[in-house]
Image 1 (tube, rainbow, N blue to C red):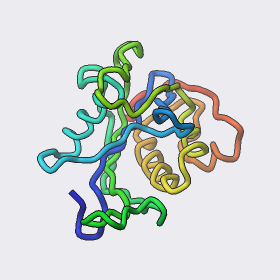
Image 2: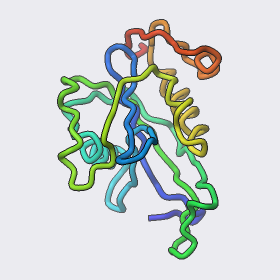
Image 3: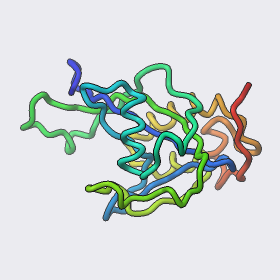
Image 4: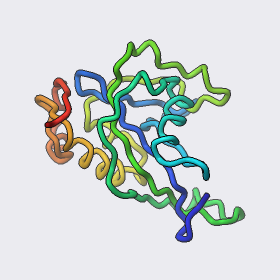
Length: 182
């Protein structure tokens, strides 16, 4: 489903561990890294889509995570001209996303890419909270920054700056512990 402005509804997932690091996944057969994300089906609300995408892309299920928060509003990005499929209707010019921040509450050995018939990722690692802003494809960077800033504000991450500028001006932020703010 594409809205009247050409944006496809989508969910994004920031998965954290107890050390305040985030799940960073490599796209299958590419040198491209991103957070899990995916489209919202017509019969789904954002939370239902998030759990489906979480399972399809990581093998994790509802009982493996704790939802800490979600963005208040849709965040949008436009696709570069070369990625727009002009022969397909309705025309999709980008994505509008609701982002969720989750905490892993199970062993990371439960992350499995082989459960999906069409795996999207072939590798993953834990990275410092703001590191994805350095590595994500350029046209998603502003949405990542908005989502991470909004959702990071509900966390207390010891030793990790809560704003992106603090991280981007340094080589790396030290790892910390993570807890939900009161």
